Image: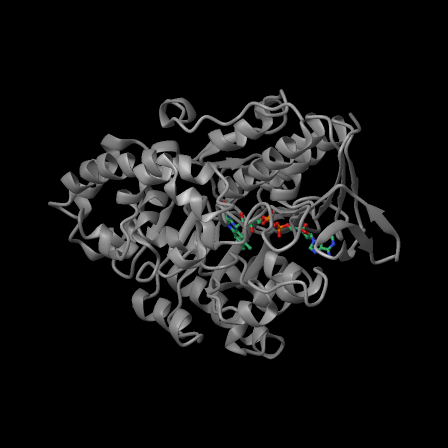
Length: 511
Ligand SMILES: Cc1cc2nc3c(=O)[nH]c(=O)nc-3n(C[C@H](O)[C@H](O)[C@H](O)COP(=O)(O)OP(=O)(O)OC[C@H]3O[C@@H](n4cnc5c(N)ncnc54)[C@H](O)[C@@H]3O)c2cc1C
C-alpha cells in the first residue's frame, strides 16, 4: 500500500504530536511552519543570554505527554527532563499568601492553619472530583464526529458527572466556605481563559488533576517538549519545513487535496491537518465561502477566551524568595474578572502571574541572573483596546504593581533586557484569531460535538489538531487532539495502531 501523504499546517504542540505519531506509523509527513523554530505558542523566546517560554509554563497530566512518546516507541525521559514542583505555586491574596502543594498531609495542615474548618473539604474534594475525573477522562480521548457519540455508553456513564448548569465557582461551594480557598481551587479556569463564575462546573477537575498528578517544569522550559517532538518527527523520516507559510488549503469542491504555500508552490496531500489557530484558519486559510457552521459570520457570534499581555524580562539579579509560579490576585478579583469578560475592559486593580523559573532551572539565565515571565489576563481583541497605544503605559502600571505587591521593590534597577507581547502581536504575528489565545471558550455549547471536529465536518480530508478542536485548549488536551486526529487518519488509511482503551483503570497511571 502507498504511504499516505500528510500535510500539516503548523509545528505547534498539536501538529507535532500528530506528525510524530503518523510518521512513526508509516505515513509520509510534511509539516509547514511559518516560523524558523518549532512550538508555536509553546516556542522558546530568547533575549540576549536569557531564555523564556513564550506561552505554556505549567505542565499537567505529564503521563499523557509520556504516552505520546510511547506511541512512537520512545520514552519522553530520553528527550526531556521533567521536574515536579513543590510547592506548586504561591497564591497571593491582599492579606495573606498560600502555598498549595501535592503533599496531601501538608496541604491539609496548611488549610487547617490558614482556613480553619475547611480541611475536611479537601478530602471530600479529592474523593468526589477523583470520581468525576475517572468518568470524564475517557470522553476526552474519543472524537465527537456525530451526535450519536452522545449515545455511546462511555458518554452516558459520564453524563451525570457533567454538573450541567453549575459553574466552577458554585461547585467549589460543596467543599469550602472560605472565599480565598475557593479561589485557590477555581483560578485554574485561567488555563482556559475563562471566568470561574462562568466556567462549567466539570472543570473543577483541573484543580483535581494538579493535586493528583502534579505540576511539572521541564529543564530549559516547556518549549523543550516541542523541540523534542520535532526531533522525533525527523527521526521518523518526517520533514518540517521552517520559514514556510501556508497561504491556503486547496480543495476541489468539498475535497481538500493539499496546500498552497506563500511562495506559490502547491503541495499535494491525501490528508491535510490544520494546527494553526482554528479561528485564524477558518477565516484566512480555508477556501472562501466553503464554511457554513464555522463561517466568519458564525464565529463572530461564538464565545472566545480572554487574551494576555506578556512581559519577559532578563534581570541581573535573582529573587530567590519568589516561587517558580506566583499568582497575585487583584484586591477585588471578581470585579477584575467580570469587567474583563463581561465589559471587555480592564480595571486598574488587575491580577497577574509571575513565573520565576530561575529558582528551579539554572539553564535559563547566566549565574546570579534570572529570566522573569509575567502574564496578565486581558480582554481579547473584541475589546477594541488600541494596544499599540496602550501597551507601554500598561507596562508601566504592571511594573508599578510588581514592585508594590511583591518583594521585587528594586526591580526597575535590575532589568537588562525585556520584551512585550500584547494582544495586538498575538493576532498579527502569531496568527491568533482576535488574540483569544486559549481559543473558543469551553462552555457546554462549544465542547465535544459542538467544538470543531477533529475530522473537520465541513470539508473532506481535512483534520484539526490544537486548542481550537476537541478536547480543547491546554497542553494535555492538545496532545490528545493530535493523537485523535492521527488515529482517525490511521483508521482511514489502514495504518496499524493500538486502539485506545476507554477503561479509566487502564488509562490512568498510579500516583
Ligand atoms: C500565554 C499563554 C500561556 C499558556 N499557558 C499554558 C500552560 O501553562 N499550560 C498549558 O497546558 N497550556 C497553556 N497555554 C495554552 C496552550 O497550551 C498553548 O497555547 C499551545 O501552544 C497551543 O498549541 P496549539 O497546537 O493549539 O497551537 P500553536 O502553539 O498556536 O501552534 C500553531 C502553529 O501554527 C503555525 N502557523 C500559523 N499560521 C500558519 C501558516 N499560515 N502557515 C504555517 N504555519 C502557521 C504557528 O506559527 C504555530 O507554530 C498557554 C497559552 C498561552 C498563549
